[in-house]
Image 1: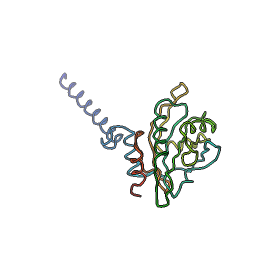
Image 2: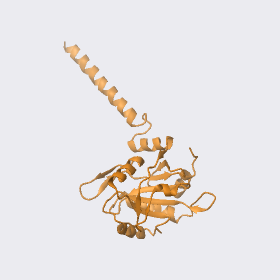
Image 3: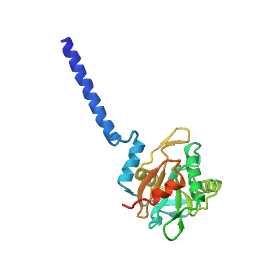
Image 4: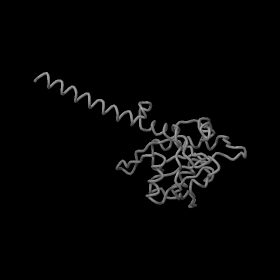
Length: 208
């Protein structure tokens, strides 16, 4: 009986390990991705996602959607003006893109940038002040908010952006640079520290 008990325990432990391994396999894209963030990036690169048409309000109170950019690529990040950690890194990276002589397509139009806040406290006035800090012109690099909480949730979900309140007025969130192609599809997700050349290569990648 004693040995039978050890056998049953061993079988149960093996079953738990197998089940856990199966979950890890699915959650990490077959062990190729060690984190859910890496799995998200692999999934988007393999299967571009349509971006929903959601009303945005920019730093000057103008309403637009990402569909406004159809026919040309646009690079998007998600920030909030009160962020003191990763958001300034994202905005510094966008400033480098904004200042770089980045031209996309044969008509020599500059690369378009949109920074979207997920903080309901970020009014157009606050976004305009934040844009001024980074010397953005508000046209080729726009800062915007989503006025509808439901639309914001839809937009964040479509991009795979997770935002969690830290209980102190701030947020924990994954951060990255998102490339939306001329057909309005999210095609690539790049690291926060991606260089302008990295972004240009992603923007100019093969169309699917």
